[in-house]
Length: 340
Figure 1 (cartoon, one colour):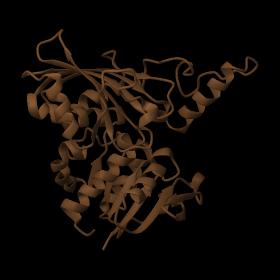
Figure 2 (cartoon, rainbow, N blue to C red):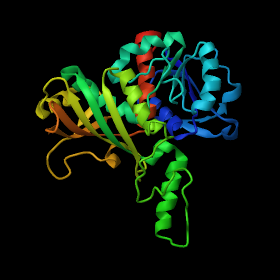
Figure 3 (tube, rainbow, N blue to C red):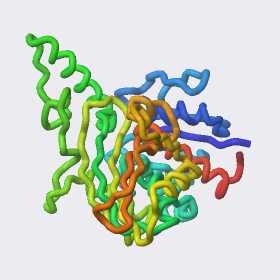
Figure 4 (cartoon, rainbow, N blue to C red):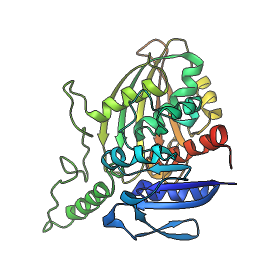
């Protein structure tokens, strides 16, 4: 016996990936509904070998459905997620709306799967920010061994994190560089993204941080450990898919790089590719379409006591969004619903 599953936002980048991953991982689906806004009504999407037509999110009745994966942004989520939850359908939300709600668990299954039972307060579970998700997967096994005091992270985030408009803008601006007659001014981003990097993701806060940077701090504390100090600089780079992070970690206890490699090699969700030679590391283009969070460049940081530095790469549309949501659904099935 399987589950009745809803995917809301099925025509977007993340919604389509959710459908792909549900099929790839053979999630036990008895029935599936794909929802979109009225402007995308009737659009066809693929689920395994099936072609499905989207239904209207605004009029859909969630009664009798088990799990709803939401990938529609904070606005529609605010309106429709509570309706789904009230109808008895457990919502797994990819937006930022519920991440900081004390009554909503924020889950990365490799890190804090035991928090899943907190869903019962609101019938909602939050999916973390894409940049946070891959980082805490890499940090968790090291934290268990040597207790992390402080993290300094610089991100190199792909344009797919800004949706289809971001990908289109990079593509159009790149073509325009070779066609002087064509001019493609920034629309989605604040400056030209082609052949450039932009140290600005989301809005600026009074502290001088951007909200993306604040998210990484707040979410790491909620998912992993509130005692960890985190500072982040989040940068948009001209890469279509795949987020990269340079992470510097200060521990309470000594941990040498060889032991860290051994720990990471055995940790769930991580693929260690770390040879100290040309090409002995992973770049974002190599992680596209994969489930793993890749770690490379593990090395000692001699500027602080008990310090390590590493490089972390993941497909942001997968582990950073759709894959993590499906993994949460799998944990729900194994520990709570127990149908499949």
